[in-house]
Image (cartoon, rainbow, N blue to C red; front, side):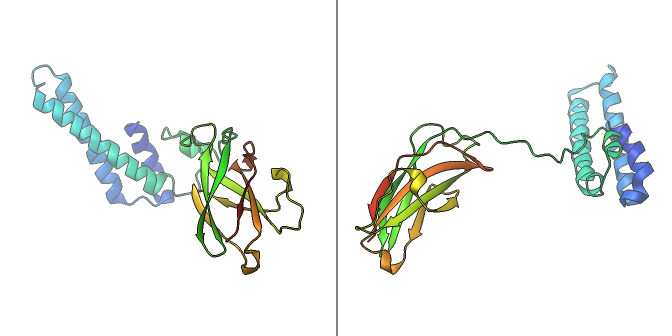
Length: 204
């Protein structure tokens, strides 16, 4: 691959803005790696020292190639043939779709201060470390004693999204003494997990 990179970098140096000094140092690294590899394939001069030197030369070359790739190969608006020529994988602009979340979670509330309730995410099922569990959509409604209480999560009217397992909701001054109803779903790129149970708490 290093030989391919030499050919491509030399051809595209002016187009991609690769300085001559960078190419010269790359050629030096490639030559040093060739020499080190030749030494370990020669039985008469193959020693533990030359083997270690060969590994060091390859490690240094890899580091330099990665830096070249980051600085010069991926900076211009490359086309597919530009990627293929040095042995790179063409860029795929289409994001990999995330897994739909399957875990069920619920809300546990706790007092924080006047007009404030803390909410804590509790996993009922599923693994909290699953990458599908990117964040949480917490739904809630504030209901006065003389108003109709929600019967299920679909009746809740307000929501916010958070990636934290503990958060705080600040209510209006006039909400003191009313009841807040909550339910939560895991949300991942628009995909939603199952509803957790409806829970309630008195707003202080």
